[in-house]
Amino acid sequence: MGKIAHIQPITYTFINTQTHPGEHQIGFSAQEVQKQFPELVSENEQGYLSVSYTNMSAVAIQAIKEQQQQIQSLIAEKEQQAKLNKEQQEQIQSLLHRLEKLEAAGQK
Image (cartoon, rainbow, N blue to C red; front, side, top):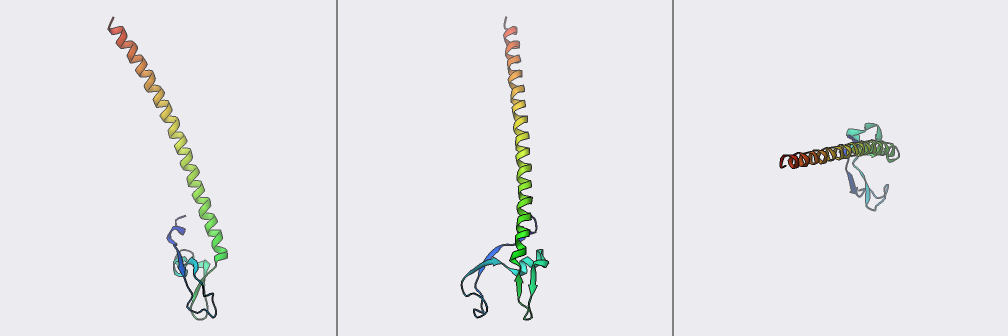
């Protein structure tokens, strides 16, 4: 998840509309992708960089899997904390009950 967090989606329009679509595009900066995943970027004869969006999906799926593991870990931690809180509440109630008995016995 760490590497993919450094890649931000961008919008752009190609300058050369004779060889590329002229409408607004959504994607990633090849330079940003290249810093994190150089194997996903290629360079043509003119020096232009391009991102392999097909292979980018494997990176995205791995990031989703890692994120899901983090979520599951946090859920387990939350459940453990809730169990501990319940036990502590029960202990507090028990101690309060004992205190009430002791105070009642002391007043007699």
